[in-house]
Image (cartoon, rainbow, N blue to C red):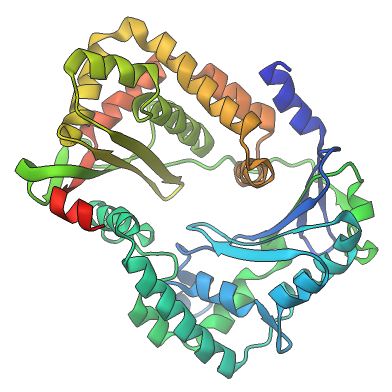
Length: 426
């Protein structure tokens, strides 16, 4: 199937409805799927640490969204995981920078039982002091375990070096001092503000049933409103001049972690476009099997045996995290930026690889149901279609790529050099 036709087909299989209470339903059909994936996404994540009240803004402890995620697994004295397991469904939950998610897979005939159980738990939670105390201990242990993960630690350390005031610099579960200071009153205020139907989207992926046939009738489904939401933008990111903060011994490095603060591109600052462009660029620049990396390694004899990048881009800021190993790991970004400017005639071929790599990842990913949810959630977040995603990927051009390279070379940077001894100890 032609790639464009695949994205068109995704849109044709998508049905968006709203309930009387304001809950959004995002239904995506896959006729051959045996199981149904259901996810309820709440627009409340780890970055949301400030509530607007009549008396003024109220600051919440870091980790509030994640703490609520834990508490909502307990409903009327029962554990939701056990209740779902009794219905043949596996329930999980996770908190991201922007949202909280409750996800489960189920046989189609069980959804009329499982969906109401989950929505009741999300909309009608009662706080139990004993459960709050219990989950404080669980989350404290989770944070302590996360600190033992060096890769995770470097990621948040880099963001803190680049932008100390950003909530993105704090692990989503919060800090131990935040958990200790958490009160039921904090949690209740956050819950009352965030767990409202109009701040939720229910994703249903798989099968060919109509939306009405999978959900209880009392929800009162309505067609999607005609209005279009305003597209989210990512701000320009000061400073424009290159700055670098370095930790570790550059003379003895073997393992290098580099963070870059990035923002809007000239003429291209809607969030979805910037995200997709950086995804394409990362596949070109930071994948060992990309033609670009093979060329640059052959040209400069770079000793690099590990290379990966992760973009963290949202409307309140953006960061690019690069991990590289090898003798020349710390020089790679500068060498790569220079090589692009010297070999501009090659950009079209590199872009073809990057675009193909991204669209193939969307179409052929082995964990397809989960990945399809992530792309559906991205379309929901940016109020766009799957075909919009394809068109943005297709329309990226050489000048756009050069703009990314300029941003890469001029961004504020933070670098952590890990000695060979420390790397082996991990």
